Image (tube, rainbow, N blue to C red; front, side, top):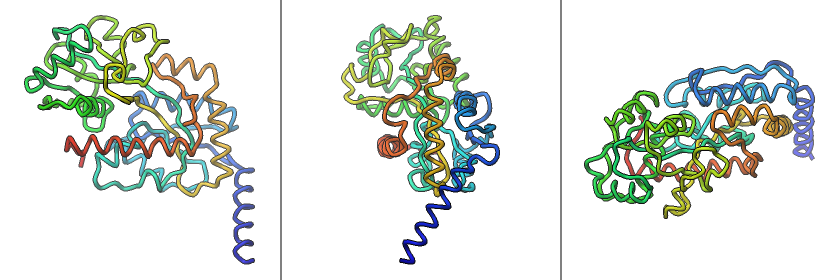
Length: 325
C-alpha cells in the first residue's frame, strides 16, 4: 500500500508539473557554434515551437569537443523540461569517437523525437576521370593507395560518411584521410584539386555541384532524392550495390533523464505540430533538409533509431581506429 501511495503521489506531482509547464523561458542548448547548420535548425524549430508550447524559447550555444560539452551540460540540467538539447548525428557517433564520455546517450536523456534528415553526397575533384558512380568506384579501387579523402574534422558529417563508405566498399588499401578545420577549407581544397574525394551534406555541396566546381556521383539516402531539382538524377549507394547503405545527418530533440512523462508528452505533441508548420518546412527545404514524418517522431522510435546508429557507427569507427580522444 505504501508503494502504491508513493507511486500515486509521484504521478500527481508529474501531472501538476505538466499543467504548470512551461513556467518560464525554455532553453534549447545547441552544442555547436552559432551560424552553423544545426544552429539554424534549432532557431527555425524554436520559432515553430513557440506557439504550440506557449513559451519564449531561447537558443544557447555551448560548443566544443565535438558537441560533447553542450550535450553533457543538458545531461546535468534540471529535469523539468525547461532545458532541452538539439543535436545531430553526434549523439550516436560520440560513443564511438570518445572512449571516455561524460554522459551515456541512451541512459541520461529523455528522447523527444527526430526533427529532420540532411542527405549526403559523394563528390570528387573536377579532374577525376569518371562520370558515373560505377566508373568512380572502379577508379578508387584501382588507385586507392594514391588518393586522399578530405573531411571537415574528426566526428564531422564528412568524416563519418567517408569512413562508412570506405568500410562499405571494402577497399584493400584505404585512401589517405586528410582532416581540415571545417567544411569550407576542405571544399576549397577539393575544388582546387589538392584532394580527391569528399562526402558531405547537401547543404554544403549542392551549389558547388550545380556550378560544376566538383563532380557528384551518388547520394547516401535509402531512396533516390526524386524531389530534389538537382540531385534527383543521381543514384543512391544502395542502388549501386552497397546494400542497406543509408546515411543522413539527422537532428533530434532531447530532455534530461527524469523529466516527467507528462512534460515530455507535452513537448513531443508540440514538436509534431511544429514539424507540420508550413514555414518551418519551407525553411528546412531551403537548408536542403527533409522534415521528419516517419515513426521516429515518436520518442520510443527515436531512441531505438539512435541505439541502432550507435552500434553501426561504432563498428565503422573501431574498424578505422580513428578516435577523437
